[in-house]
Length: 102
Image (tube, rainbow, N blue to C red):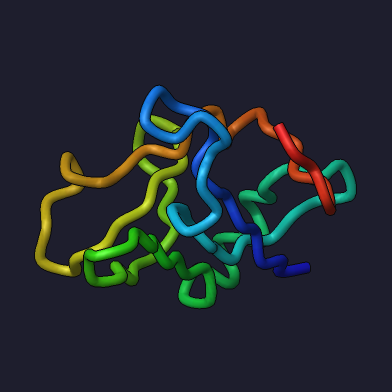
């Protein structure tokens, strides 16, 4: 089942409380454990989109991709090289849960 996942900026020296106006929204199929389901992703990859939002900058739209190295990443420009993809930190092992705040 496809789910919309929102990741917001965590605490940083510049943003001591984090910032919900910086982040990502992406669509991915999750299995019963809340992990990205690779088999389902392969069937629905065109629906697995991402939005990167940062105040004062234009939103970036792209797609979730699964790299040859087995990692998940965000790909924003159809003409860019795979090396320019933005990796998803530990997406291969992370469990996404409704209302989770980490």
